[in-house]
Structure formats: C-alpha cells, structure tokens
Amino acid sequence: MKLLRIILVLSSPPLPFGNADARWYYVLIKGLVAKGHRVTVFTACGKPEDISQAQVLFPSPEYDLRCYLISHPKRGLMAKIKTIQQPYSYVFSPELRQDLAVELTQPYDILHLEQLWSGWLGIEHQEKVVINIHYLFSLDRTFEDNKSWETRFRRFFTYHAQQKLLKAFPTIIALSDVLAKNIQQINPHACVYTVPLGIDISLYPFVEQKHINQKPIVGLIGGFNWKPSYSAAVRLVTKLWPEIKHRLPNAKLQIVGRCAKDVLAKFTHIEDLEIHQDVPDTLPYFANMDVMLYAPVAGSGMKVKVMEAFALGTAVVTNSNGVEGIPAIDGIHAGICDDDQGLIDRTVELLKHPNLRQQRRLKARQLLEKHCSPQVTVGQIEQIYRKILA
Figure (cartoon, rainbow, N blue to C red):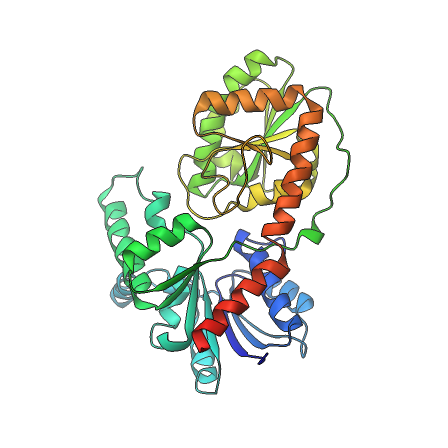
C-alpha cells in the first residue's frame, strides 16, 4: 500500500483534552503518522501555551506540526468586506496562509481540511482536497434567538458562505448521516462520506464498578457558550429537573462547564443545583455523577461530552440530537427519547436502579470502542484518500 504525502489544516491545536474537535485531531495525526504517511500539519492556535503543549505531544522530527496564533479580526472597511466575503477566515493568519501556499507548490497527494471555514484555504485546490464537516450552522440555528438587524445580517452571510463552500468541493466527509444528507442536498454532485469522530478511548479511565451516591446526582457537562449545550441546560432546569426532583426528593443536580455560571445565573436559586464554571478537569465530575442528562433542542454533529460519558462509564439519558453519529439503541446503550416525559422517566429509572446503570455503562463503552476508536476512524479516512487518488 502506497504511503501518502498529506497536508492537514486544522482550526485548533491537536490537544486530547482541548476543544471538542481537538480530540479528533490528536487521533488523526497520531494515526496517520503511525501508519507511515508523511504528514505536515498547519494548525491555528488561540493561545501561546496551546502551541507549547502541542509541540510536546508532537515533537519534531517525528511530527511536522506547524502552529500559528490566530490573528484577531481587523477593523475598518476592508476588513469588514473581507469578513463578508470569507466569514471566519481570520482564524488562519497571513503567516499560515503564506507557508501553506509554499507547501502546496511541492508534490503532495492529499490536502485534508478540517472544519468548514478551513475551506477558504483549499478552494483553489479542489482536485486533491477533502474537507471534513463537523456541524452546520443552518442546523444549529445559531442566529435564531437574536432578531437584531446585525444578527440577521451575520446569519445571511454566514449561511451564504456555508452554501458556497459546501458546493465548492467534490469530496466531503461528515461526522454523521444527518450531516451527510443535508450536505448532499446542498451539493448533489459531491461524494459525501460519513466518518464518526474518533477519540483515543485509552485516555479515559474506566472502572468496572462505579461508586453509588447516597444522594443520586444528575449532571450535565458542556460548553455553555455553544447554543446546543445551552439549550440542553435550559431544558434540563426548566422542564426536566422539577419532576425528577419531585419523584426523587434526595436527588441533586450538577451543571459543569465553560461559561456555566455566566449564562445560567438566573437559575442559581433552584434547589439542590450546583453550577461549576471553567473547571480545570471535567473527569472527576463525570466520575461523580450517576446519570448525565443531555437533551439539546437543536445541534448538529457528534456531541463529544456524550462520547466522553460513554468512554468513562457514566450512564446517559439523551435525545436523538445527543447521540447523532453514534448507533446507540434506547434501553441498551443509553436512555434515548425526544419528549420531556420520556427523558424524565428514563432518568428516574436509572437513578433508582444501579444495576441498570451498570449494564448501560458497559454496553456504551463497548459501542464507542467498536465505532469510534482510532483504528476504525483513521482507517476509514485512509480509504477515502485512496478513492480520491484512484
């Protein structure tokens, strides 16, 4: 099997516990290099310390990882015009663009772009390009709540840019069949493949028997500056938790994650609710909760916190949005239901029956190992490369 020369462009550094997408980038780089491919990685980084961490994880010369700080959006008329023409392209600095352009003058087999907005860097190299789409703004309803003229304008040019980029590429990867179907409707001529988000499951400790709390804990972990997680939190505290608390008076609720206190401040009066914001490590909170209840109103793509709960052995109750991209079955791997009453009933049932939680957590971990392991997901990416070059 021929070893390939691959140029990979990332929107965030490949840290295994960094941004949600970064978990996949970590797996992808490690997997491709382990298979013998020659990979050069260009990645945008938000902080200097991210660069330092990434360079430790991917040392030279074994890895060719090139990190560039994100350049903050410029002001002025020309900058605004650029934003309208290429939304969110500021993530990729002029230095990254220049170095990438030089690299693309040399022989290569595949230009692999991760995330929609990296498409701006490959729009002139469509023949040997594959772009991986993690979510769609149009499905996430990103701009639906705010009806200001500014937000309406942002919505218009963001959706327009999404359509333009998706129509530009002949080969597209999506994390789920839901995404793939929507992308195919936008670009009927593209070859659209589904490859689930891969994570390194070995990094998630799994105990065979989990501690049982005297006062059962329902939890939700996420980044609450992201609309799907915020909608899940609001739904939980306003529509689901009151009846759960009524049926199990000794139960407690924990909400943990980025911006949690900032955006959920109006709910702090709720009985037995704890909110923890910007914690250094979420793993202890996963370990301590009995059930994670995550049911976003909208949100496309795979939900990393659901995947992490599966990996760590935390029982999950969620909806179809929550398990998008994972072939989980209600009553086997998790409690899965789209209506409020069904979510409540499944949560209460799991809280009352530790043995049932134990069965679910074992099955969920096995499912993740079978469907989202590095070997499976990176292998599927390799197959797509071969089809492009055939």
